[in-house]
Image (cartoon, rainbow, N blue to C red; front, side, top):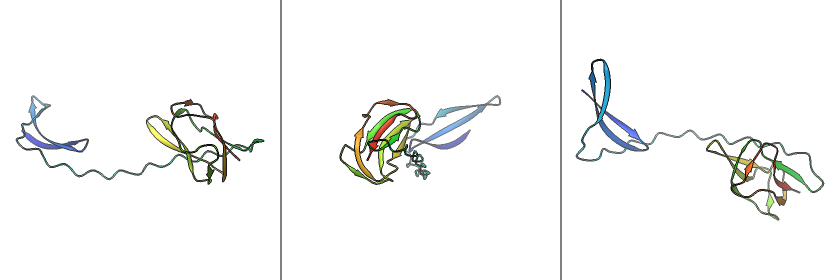
Amino acid sequence: MKHFRIAVNGTSYDVEVTELDGAVSAAAAPVSTPAAPAPAPAAAPAAPAPAPKAAAPAGDGTQVTAPMNGTIARVNCKVGDTVKADAAVIILEAMKMENEIYAGVDGTVKAVQVNTGDAVQPGDVLVVIG
C-alpha cells in the first residue's frame, strides 16, 4: 500500500493506493485532521491577445474589429472617452479565455457597437475611435 498527498484546486488530500492483481485502485484515506494546503504552483502569465490592426480609418474614425469569434465579456470604454492606442477597450471571451482588444490608435471613442454578452465574429466592428 502506498500513501500519497494529492492537491486538487489548492486543497490537499491524503490517499492510499493498493495494487490488486497488477491493477492500481485508489481509495480516499480517512484523515482525522485536514492536510496542510499545498503551496499554489506559480501560474504562468497568460499572453495577451495581439492587438488587432486597426482598420483603415473610416469617414468618422478608425474601426476596432473583433480578431476572432467570441462573446463580449466587458466594455471598458464609452462614447466620449479619450483612449490611448494601448488601452484595452474590450474584453472578448473566446474558449473560456479573456482576450484584451486594444484601441490601436490614440483618440476619442466615437461609437461603441457592442454590449456585454454580445456574440461577435471576426471582422465585426466593436468600437470606432476618431
